[in-house]
Image (tube, rainbow, N blue to C red; front, top):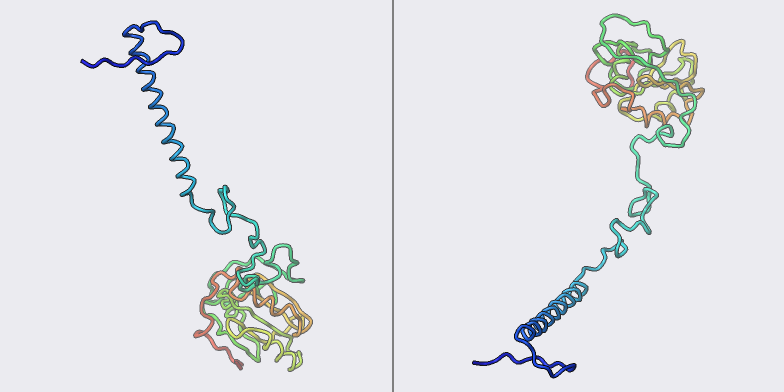
Length: 243
């Protein structure tokens, strides 16, 4: 029968008891096992460092969010141009002044079959005919109740003093888009030109006023209309329609 060798001990030559011999053998085996485990752990750490993915483009290594260095904070796209804002108007831009002279009202829509005494001239909303007025240019006054229904559908109504020079009338028509726009004379207007959309109005001294395109761009099918984008044709062509 083979005997387990007794580990050498530099401090003494005294014989070891069986229990002490067994303890020394166990300690040596345990130390060897710990060494193997430590070597495995170090190898795994080195391997993970080698295989770790590089930082994504535009991100700093070790960050948890996207790198904001060089990020576009102006709102411009890849070409550097500012994004387009449909129907942009100075009043809708934070920090910009609203359109000078703009008046606002609080009319509620409803359908009636009778004439209406409107509080504004021209009317800016309120009860109106169930039949809307076909959008376009007219050379004579149009029925209020039908025009107000067109405002409900998002139309801009440009009215002018009947005494306005023909050249200014032509300039007014040219300054406005082709759809969802009404242009007509209006007796007793009180101003050379008045632009009206649902619950908003702007009085002007000239058909060349630069506020005309801004008003039309924002309020045509804009946020104040109860039914923006609904039809503005196929209903009533009033007398005097010229375009």
